[in-house]
Amino acid sequence: MFGRTFGNFSIDLNPANGGGSYSGGDALTGRISFELREEVTINRVAVALRGRAGVFWAGVGSKKTHHSAKLDVFKFKVVVMPQDTAGPTKLLPGTHVYPFTFQLPHGDFPSSFHGLHGKIVYTLTVAIDRPWHMSKEFVTEFNFVNPHCANQTELMSPLAGSNSMTLCCLWCSSGPISMDVRLERKAFLPGELVTIFCEFSNNSFRTTTPKAQLFQKQAFFTHGREYHRRQQKLLTSGAGPPIRGHTSKATSEITLTIPADTAFTISNCNLIGVDYIIVVSLCVSGSPDLEVLFPIIITALPGRIAPPPHL
Image (cartoon, rainbow, N blue to C red; front, side):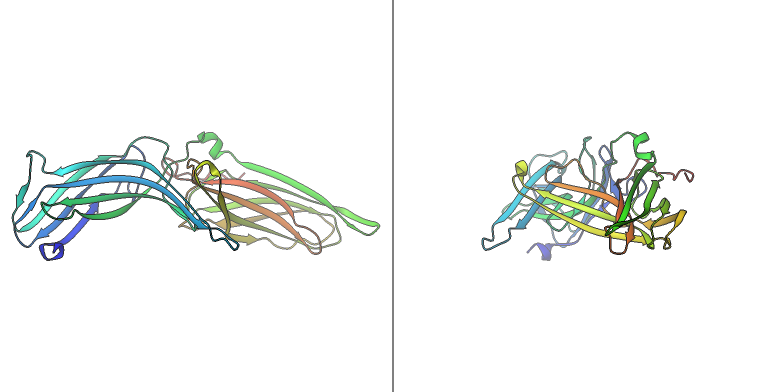
């Protein structure tokens, strides 16, 4: 019945901040349009905004228990038609357009996210209510980003780390292997190139190979964090040239490109957490890798981060 009366229904959102994402305090504007093939009486057309986080996974073992939790981030609605009359309104055949404007609430809300065991989604729902008919709803999802609220100086400050070890073989020991590693800063954007500055010393008798890996860590929790599920995913990796034994000093730059579709860091949601870590390692045959770890943040800072000069 609805399809025979209504046609070409669309929800069009105007881009904010020059792109297709929105943040707290932004004006979310757009329009609803549809075509009527006959005269229709409508009680109201309402638009609702909702942010919601949810997790779900099945337990392991013989008992297939299921765990789930949901959390409303925010929820509110406005009536866009009728605006000046009380009671039903008759609409004639033809095209009808209704603009709308919302101001997204200010607050520390998590960014949109879709993971293996949970998601954080922000939706706009249009409900058309007619007398003696079930209300018809149309839902569209919009992308919400939360610029990380940490101190800007901290996000832009370089990171440095070092590690060393000595190889032992029975009663013999070789010279030490050491590494000093630096990153240009702590915060990066999806799609950005990360340059890792490395300095190595290999006074052993073995050849070592430097490499770098970017991992994403997802965590999903029920309320009260009674149950949880964690997942680690390798996003990208790179390697430098091998370093022969008895090399007192070698330098290398390893680059990693953060995938353009990488989700933002999430640390402000009770049900879902998303973190990132860069692992820089020296691979030594027959021995554990020598590693330096750098927790980083993937975020959308106000404006675009301008990469600083090389360290």
